[in-house]
Image (cartoon, rainbow, N blue to C red):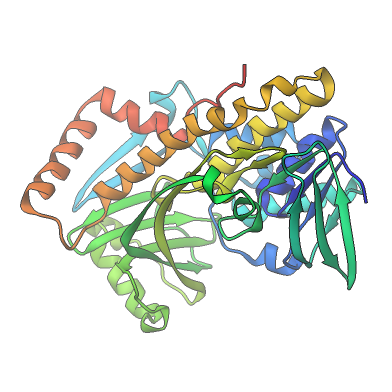
Amino acid sequence: MQTSVAIIGAGPAGLLLGQLLHRQGIDNVIVERRPVAYVLGRIRAGVLEQGMVDLLREAGVGTRLDAEGIPHDGFELALGERRVRIDLAALTGGRRVTIYGQTEVTRDLMTARQAAGLTTLYESENVRLHGLDSESPALTFTHNGDSIRLRCDYIAGCDGFHGVSRQSIPADRLQTFERDYPFGWLGLLSDTPPVHDELIYSSHERGFALCSMRSRERSRYYLQVPAGERVEAWSDDRFSEELSRRLPSDVAGKLVTGPSLEKSIAPLHSFVAEPMQHGRLFLAGDAAHIVPPTGAKGLNLAASDVGVLQRLLTAIYHQGRTDLIPRYSQTCLRRVWKAERFSWWMTRNLHRFADAADFDERIRQAEFDYFLGSRAGLTTIAENYVGLPYETLA
């Protein structure tokens, strides 16, 4: 098999890159080790930055997003009984976020790819990368029992934190930075109306809580729990009771509960790999970086990587600009580290750390006193939440 760009991973990052390249007339093949049902069954993020919404429209998959997505002009921070609304639109010149689940983004991109007749090889096993330092890289893998060699010009590694792409870069050429947090997020999805029409991030003495949503009829709630906690220890009733304790009383009084559709615990982890490019291989999304979900940046960072990579590959194929290749990593990492900082700031200040000293608690209180009492501070939060501008290659 032969293609221009081989994309590893059929999650939203790989599918979005494939769609954008297709619209630029650049041939691509996606290789994915999981079946379609598994990819669509993953419950993930649902807060899309303005930049990602614009990129999905550019990719030609914005119709259902525009019809069903829920624009949010703000969100709330709750500190005990105190509620402060961050007016995103007023503080950022009209920018906003949109609530639209990652599953729906993936479904829209899959539908568009199928309609265009583009090749996606699901359930591909034993994927290996070859010739990354050469002008003729390739993938080898097994699909439907056949051994396949896919020759290409470039490889995009969009296969997540545990994927083969980053692992294919020689260890002596890769530097990693990471931080683990001593807690996770216990998430519950239910077909109940959200407790509020905007997201509420709650910092309480019992721990962090988040009231989110996937639609006007489907709620997504989270609780901070200790690392190592077992999801089986949390019945729906126990979850609802604890959530109520961590919300302001006027919010808790409006909480509608119902049977969970899904419950899971996600550990919180920060990770960055540098560089994000090696030879003809480019990393994008979770293959290169992980952020705690507190700042709603994971999926959005993947989209910004894809935006940069699509512009780079378009410049290469349409203008012969191979001189831009070394700029990919540094361009993406400028935005990655700013998003890591914001996610770290939100995580550090909204969660409770069991080993925090009195000094640390006073500093946390001072952080909120300043940021929430200053227009400059509020603007800083708002600008980061709606998404910083995409970096340019030139």
